[in-house]
Image (cartoon, rainbow, N blue to C red):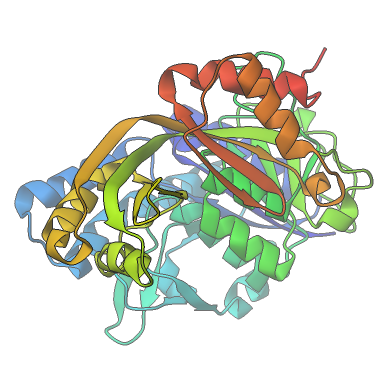
Length: 421
C-alpha cells in the first residue's frame, strides 16, 4: 500500500456537492488500503472575499491579523470535507497547519515553510484515519501565530506535506485534466502530456501556466517528489488507485525527474504571459556602472526585471536600454526611474503594457541545435516583430506586441510538431 497526498483547489470544493465528489476520490484511495492525507483550499471566491473585508476594515492592516482572517477559509473546507467523509464511513479528522505543526518563517502573508512534523499524522494512518489538512497556512513559532503562504500556497502545502509523510505521489486535483503543450483555448490541437520534467514545469509555471504554483514545483524538484496533475471533475471510478512503486500513468500528467522521460521532445510546450510591461530608457551614457545605476534602484524597490536589451548608439557614446517588468509593477518602476533621473541621466523614458512574452520550453533543447533559429524564422514568416529575447538551457522567450500573441503561439506549436491529431 502507499501513502498518498491529494490536494483539491477552490473550484473543486466550491460547494457541498463538489465536496461530496472530492470525498468519492478520497474513498477510492482509502478503500484500496492507501494511507491518505488531503490538502484543501478555501471554497472558490472565499479568500477574495476575506481579503476584501480586511482591506475594507483598514488599508494599513496588521499582517498577523490579515493571516488570522484569510486562513479561516481553508478551515471551513477541511471541516466540511471531514464531516462528509465520516458520513460515508471513512474515518477522517480535520487538521489546521498549527496542529500538525507546519512551521514557517515570520513573513506573514508570504511565509515559507521551514519544517513539518509528520509523526502524529503517520500515527493516525496506523488507525486508518484520513487526515484533512488546511492548505495555504502554517504556524510562525516565534510569536505562535498563524502564517499564510501567499497565493497558490495550498500547492506548496501539499508538496511539503507529501515530502514530510514520504508519500508515493502528491496528486494535485484541479479543473483541468493535466498539463498541456499549450493553452487548449488558444490551440485546440494542444495535447495533454503524460509526463513532464520538473525543470520544464518550473519554466512553464513561471512563464504563464497557472496550473501549478512555482514554489510547489521548486520544492518537488529539490526533494524528488513526483507530482501528478488530475481533474477533480473526472469520475472517481475512472482513476486507478495509487500503488507503491507506480511509474506508469494513464490519466493526468506526472511531474517527475527527466530520467523518467525516455525520449524527450526537443520542445515540450509553448507558454505565454500577458502580464508583462516594457520599459525603454533612451540616451543613457555608455560607461561602466550605468547598468547598476539603472537596475540598482529597481532592485531596492523589490521590482523584478526580466528581459534586458541594450543597444549602442551610432556615436558610441550613448545607449538605449529596454527591459520588462510585471505589468502590475509598471507604475512603480516608472516612479523609481523618474526619481533616479539625476543619477541615471537619461534623455527619455518610454513604456508600454501592450506586449506579451511567448516562450518555447523543452529539456530536449540541451542536445539540439537550431531551436532558436527555427523560432525566429517562423515568427518572421508571420511578420511578427521581436522586441526582446531571453534564453536559458531549456527555454527561449521573446517579447512581441500583444495583438500577435495567439498567432505566435499557434505558429510555434505547429512548427515544433506539437499539434495533436
